[in-house]
Length: 378
Ligand SMILES: C[S@@+](CC[C@H](N)C(=O)[O-])C[C@H]1O[C@@H](n2cnc3c(N)ncnc32)[C@H](O)[C@@H]1O
Image 1 (tube, rainbow, N blue to C red):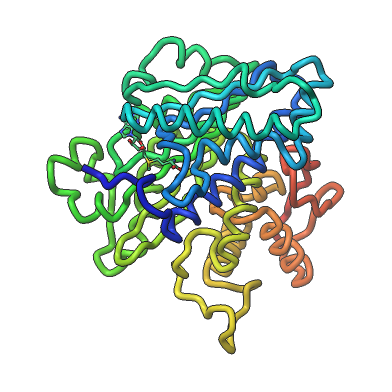
Image 2: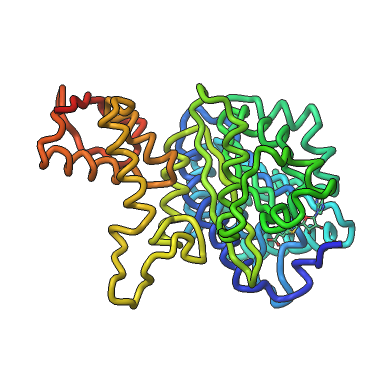
């Protein structure tokens, strides 16, 4: 049985994971809050734990509550003034009874202490805060959850901080991928899958022929797991997945994020590149770059940046990328911020390798709103 994460002090790696959850949600929430088509926002934490570590540090459910309020309660105020629109709902779930009761207590206390300083007189969050004690398997298969997932007027943020790897199966992953207005992030123990990939305990969940671990590069095992999930998505579907490797001792764990909107990916990549200026992808210098404080450290030209820039150049040369929209989305799909594509275009223009058909623009954020231009190779 896995050690109870909440019974001790969160180690640094767990704090990093929680900080990515926090930043990711902080980026996500206002986008959905300010989308006039969204009637309800569902915030799910389906492996919620008890809410705190042994020192009282907030775990994921409390982090979600804190960030939903916003700085000085600004989001609560916005919703309150807008006659409770959109409705905000929390779904916290924890299977272990003892932890579930603690979770209830911790959530109630968090809301009570928040109400003490709340100027609104009525808490808009506590009314729709549901805490459950189910097995994830049961929840994910329930018709009521599916109805919410499928509703195009509902925005969904889904946190799946499982122990191990067994709960996010191919089917669960695809169910989330095919849910509109749904972004999700899950945790997975990639080292364990690598170590035991030939054992039934693992290959009952993953088709091992679709995972190609490089024995020489254990640090890339989470990348491989992310590739496995990416490969499940049909080629014609516009969908974005990114991964973040967390090294703890000799083991590699990681996060996998999924969104069907380029803006969701832009936001998540901002969080990841802030954590890891070398590759936007790990806490362990995954591509063996020169590190900060060393003579050749150059965050503008790391191995990942060079590799993706070269891929973009190659694709422009071969006519696979023929316009800026394809190029910007390609940079995102490679886990890089769209500005990388703009830098490559500027470079190729300077070297007179390409010309632009139409009016050039250097839009490198909110790329779904970018105006299209075409690229012609000279
Ligand atoms: C990694 S911990 C979550 C920690 C939490 N996110 C936090 O920040 O404190 C995983 C939690 O999932 C619970 N759990 C294990 N199996 C479960 C299942 N089948 N369904 C729901 N919860 C489960 C465990 O009891 C544990 O508290």
